[in-house]
Image (cartoon, rainbow, N blue to C red; front, top):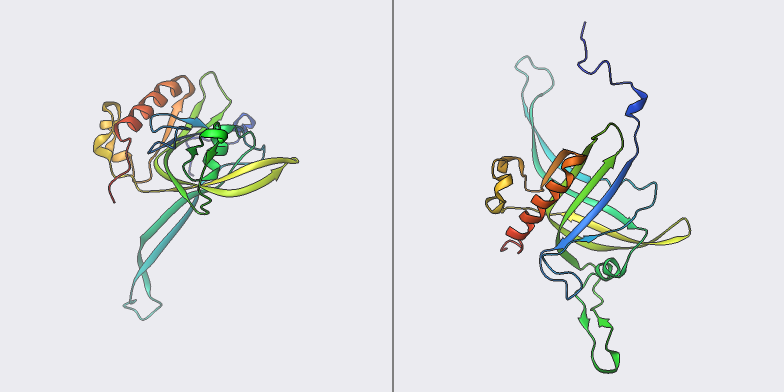
Length: 231
């Protein structure tokens, strides 16, 4: 008989916890004077039912061989040939001026003269802001609960329209996760874990008491790789 290693905890009602999510964004290049490449912006609060989940699309090819006994072909292996991942909808319920500027999608230029105090931006549907993103998933439980921190060193942030939630306007974003190839530039605290930093980033499982220290490390990583990779 198989004995599960988590038999004592797998069905505990205490495992039912609600998660809170926070999203932090930093552009790879200065976004006008609104948000510079060494600054981070908090996306704000999200509607209660939103999970901010990653959508993945995996393309694979089956490698088959003939059955020597004359039966159906044998499946030897499945090779993954292409993977894409994105946060298809990030609906912001409490957008401030910084988030509203990012939602426009194109870099603003300050107006002068009689229009001083305002900005002008190209109307450019589909424009993508090259950025880095951190998603923090918090939940309750225990004295020092484990948090999940999704770190994506390269994303394309796009306007995804506007929505309505609880009769309130939401500004919707899409974040397409892009390739990160600058593992050699990681700060000293992450150099021992270079092989765990994938092309789409990493997932940290960290005690809540260590969250601040982790964010300091990721901020340092951003400073060391502040510019986008050369195409």
